[in-house]
Length: 130
Image 1 (cartoon, helix red, strand yellow):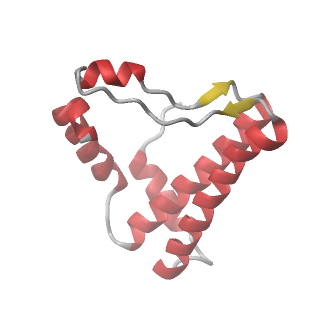
Image 2 (cartoon, rainbow, N blue to C red):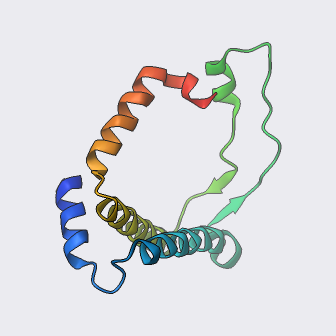
């Protein structure tokens, strides 16, 4: 089953009853970001299915951007267990809900924003990182 951004945004707008004010949406979006971060960190600190080993990213002036990209790490070791994966996916879904709510409150189209960003990424490619 594929998801249509416009359908998602419209349904989100129709379901927003208690938090319709842009002020409520902004604070809920911020709160949901924290909830997602907490779920990721608890996967490492509480469950232990993943480990986070953050170190300085090494970037060589003698290599191309593409070569450097291959050397960069995401600092995550292991795989999410099914329980942690489910929780993180749930929190991501809530985050997308409030992002769509913000788009509706500001009369923006989430699909247009995604398409514009996709075009931007395709145009700049790896140079988008700079």
